[in-house]
Length: 177
Image (cartoon, rainbow, N blue to C red; front, side):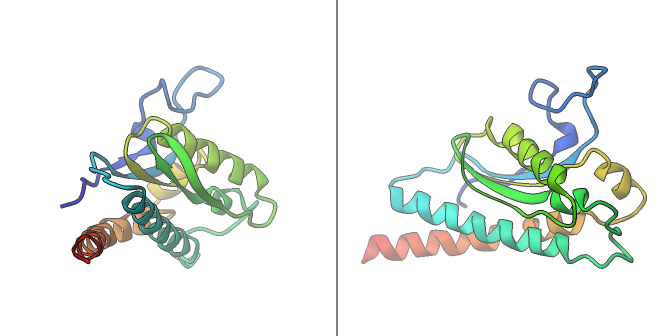
């Protein structure tokens, strides 16, 4: 298999790269990163394919998370939580693509989501997708049984192996041609 998948909740991110509140405590945040690490990249073409696949997966996850019905998800008050849902693709710790969209008056949500993705992604190696719900109260919302990005995480766990398998087949076909 091409690389390994690891799902790491942002609340488990070590304090040295996490977000701290004014008291110095690691803030509760929720997000996750799907790492495709240790991948042998033999060409720029292969890396481009990997990045494109992860962009597709990021778009799928974000669309899914943003479309969760309010009855099982949450109702927008300010738009910050929904605006903090987005993704970034990193190559060896450098963001090569990012997608966050403001909802209502959620400019703060966009900034917090992007900052969380950067904090998680900048420490990675290989090609990495980071999908976030970056507002500090996202954990609280999920702890109440609401779906902020949990179902999007499950989607990523189902889809990533399929995408990687297709990627390997495409690379093999290209090498044979």
